[in-house]
Image (cartoon, rainbow, N blue to C red; front, side, top):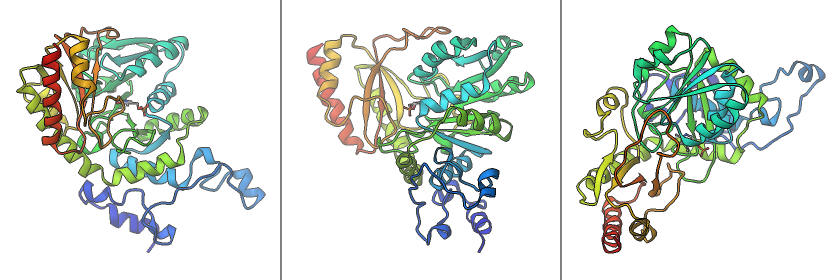
Length: 397
Ligand SMILES: *Cc1c(COP(=O)(O)O)cnc(C)c1O
């Protein structure tokens, strides 16, 4: 059976959970081995002068791709329903390559105020140095984005829900306006993954992932991906190449392994995080829970309209304000680690404060904000750990 007919048979109209098992795979080409081998390599040989001069073979230079890269690229392209995927060395480099691919000196970009903070640093330091004007907008702006689009606006950057604070954006409304003004829309889809949110179907042009998070899923890889529609594939591909971007081959393999279990992991992350969020909401120490899948979230209806699920990441506000009490609670947690890069199997908690860098909106938080990532542990054990933490908090406060 030819490669294409077999791939066609396996993609078909089957459920995405089924297709996830085979996306990017090609056992026929690897002696029946289920997984695409980890190709390492810088030098790729050409059989003839003619092949070298025409660069006619599929793989030409290690940095530009290997069969291992191709397997992950095609899997992510299929997951997002895009035309092409480029892999980068980190989630942040996927954000910066996407921005650099589209901006030109003298241009203007619109970035959500709830953006992943290092993207703001990149924009402040690099984009501005290149003569690009940056405007941050209220994540709730929706079709009101129209008023902020200038003649020189080159892109609209979205992230939904927003980092740390979980504002859900009205992506279809933003994309509808953007289309009429011929401005591309970029979306960071790391939180929901393509299993629960499909920005390209909602009108976006470029979708970014920190593959470091749920794709790899085990806190052991750094990788980014940029998936585009056909219209933006050329410019992304070129800039990605010009910047010499490539992930490490082992990280690509770890991501390929990770995506096979994405649906089961996410189902558990979703279920446990909701259970923990609901439990936390009942605690007297907690003033509010910020989770888009809860009915008390201000953007819950929007989330319900556009997303088919939620993940393991949400925030809460604690009534306590002192570092001493918070330290007493967090320092001795047994199961919750204090670390920022989420999406692995383990539970995490970190304090955060976005007030210092928000510019278009004011983040109003009474008390201390904590961001949780709920891992794959048993939820009774997680509650027990937090219960003891709250007891320490009370006696220190
Ligand atoms: C973590 C994260 C990134 C950056 O990913 P790295 O691989 O750590 O560089 C980008 N966007 C979002 C939303 C993230 O959570």
